[in-house]
Structure formats: structure tokens, C-alpha cells
Image (cartoon, rainbow, N blue to C red; front, side):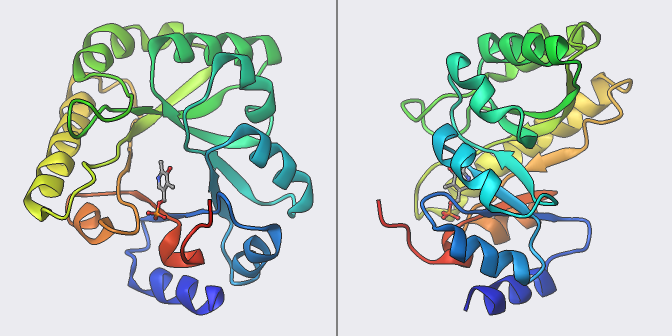
Length: 219
Ligand SMILES: *Cc1c(COP(=O)(O)O)cnc(C)c1O
């Protein structure tokens, strides 16, 4: 089943769009089914679970961390990931950068924009990204700014989701114009199982699918 779902999704995606298989809460046996179907990028959102799965999977897996990361958990996550998609505060950015500089690494990161209803979750504001972080991008020697990540409002109202995706896509293109020296700032990670067709229309370059690939999660 997992194999067929991966092949179906991959056949429908433009070749330039990367698929992250969000494997949180699913056992390694299911991740291996996806791996055997050709999937190489996996997304996890809990540090302990990531650290436990990494040694059980082949070494050519690319792990993306997509959840809230506390600054005291960096060493459970950063050694293993090829991308940290969920940089959701300046404090976390500073801590990640300092850790990478100490380790002599440069880590690919996405800045997570706070999208959706005011009361929902975390994330950076447009102002923090545009006025505080990116003007100082060259001072962050430990990270490579690869683009933006966002989660649309959790709603059945497509017009709300479209508006969220349009906002992050337009911020992304404005930032690329404002900061042309940031040549790596190409990625737009939007779209989950319920809304990825809308995300693709809005210009997603990375989509993050859990349920569509692995079925429902049992919490
Ligand atoms: C869990 C999760 C996903 C995948 O959700 P599905 O609805 O199962 O596709 C994508 N992005 C983030 C940040 C997540 O936490």
C-alpha cells in the first residue's frame, strides 16, 4: 500500500518538487516500505523519535526535522538532519547557528513563518524574517538560509488556505528580490496531506505528506 501511494504521488508531482515522507508515529518497518519504494527524504517532529529511528534506517536517508525544537535538544537532532525546516524563533536560530559553528558544520534551514489564525502555534513574523534576520544573514556562518516553511490554517475553507499560501509565496518572492545575494533561498515548504494540491498551485517546492503515505497516525 505504502509503495503504491508513494509511486502515485511521485508520478503526479512536478520533477522539481521534493516529497518529504512525514513518518512521525509510524514504525521503522513502514518507513522501510517507503524507502524500498524509492523514498529518501523523511520528516520527523520529535527529537527522541528521530534519534531512535536514525540508526535503524539506511545511511542514505535524508532526515528533515519539521517540529518545534527546544534549544536544549539540539544535539539529539542536528547531528542527523540534512535540513531543519522549523526554525520558529530568533532564539532557536541563534542557538542552532552557534551549535553548527562549534561543530564546524553548515546546516540547511528553513525559516518557519507564522501563518494562519492568530492563536495557532508558533513561527516567525514577516517582520522578524525581513527586518531582523535576513539583513544579517551573512553573520550566520553555521546555517544556509534555504527558504520558508509554513502551515496553513486548519480549516475546510479552501479560500482561507489559498490566502495563507498566497501570503507565504508572496513573502518568499519579495525576499528573493530584496536579498539577491541569498542565492540559496529557493525553497517554499508548504502543503500537507489535506492541502497539498493547493500548495502546489501556490508554488510549493517541498511538500510534507504523512497521512497520504502512511495512513492515519495512532497517538
Ligand atoms: C505532521 C506534519 C505534517 C504531515 O501531516 P499530514 O496531515 O499527515 O500530511 C506536515 N508538516 C508538519 C510540520 C507536521 O507536523
